Image 1: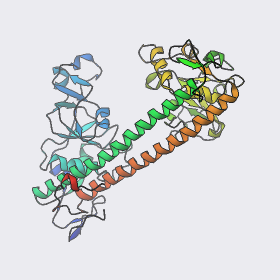
Image 2: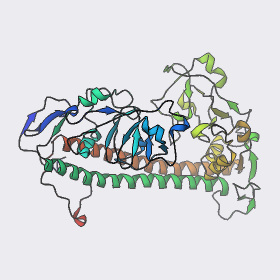
Image 3: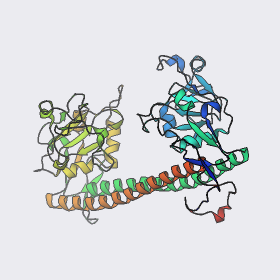
Image 4: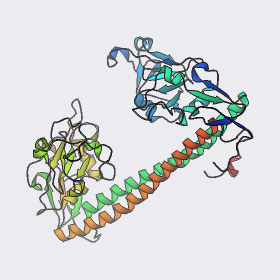
Length: 450
């Protein structure tokens, strides 16, 4: 924050998260700025009579707030007159705060909305709600109340007991709001650009794989009709085979067990939610099964896991010995590839293509949840080059993936740093660590890059 000056004189707030504050700022508990009240929900919440697509009030879920930035403009459901009468109605431009799920996330609704008891709100706030929004967005006001995330325990009393520092005049409060609106918007624009870059890299990554595993690397190679709609033309000397002819044993469903233990001496229980976008496993989601239970479901190097149901249907993972001893969950299907026919990496790369995902969409059984069975997966068809050509193409793909992954990680690091800067800037402004009283919005042509 070196580019911003401090106030001339400070006092000790005797509040951990506030630290020193400008000498003329007031320190007040939130409950003295407004009552803190909790939302409400009709029960049972899944009863259709509480919902109406033509209803006046939107139904706010934790997921809606988690996905929002500052303002809530829409939700996926609206409440019926009965449903809204049993909830808490908020008119537009009211501040509310999540106390469940994504704990501690503030939001301001721009629509008529109903909030359930996973939220608290501030019906008679004596300061602009955007200032208190930024207090929460600075993520420091929760210090001493528990860890950020699901372990943080917030309720009306704990929120009401949070002490905040407030400038003496409405003008100074509004200047801080204006400053943060402007500066965070600049940071958000840069974050959005990095997010668009990541999306573009993902698309290019998929395009490189899709082209390589269907067309090869020789643009002069004679082509033939594969006879498979989603594959189109493939090199004339390639074969086309269904997955069931590429495996060394029948496709196998995983263990229908609930793995709660975190015992690294036992086999890791791999779930598809453990798999990161780069194909590696998360470190913080480790769960294990006892060896005797895991034994029939143990993975060997090159085994491919395919998600068969739910929102992750179609997602894949290739296991390597470097992950240590692993078994797999029941909603996954194991494909053990016969490497005398084709390399496991080749089949795995086929599951990362655009045509694979088109095939997944066309193969789902629409029941209560999305589902692609082992029988369906057996019918997925793969174009297969001769072994030596296959090795060359696999190496080509790995080289390109390494480049895309490195660029993606660089963009993700940039986003992390910008978000940290955003949070730090907000916290500094709402606690008076920087003096922005004389700040004026610069002309667009003179704005600095954050």
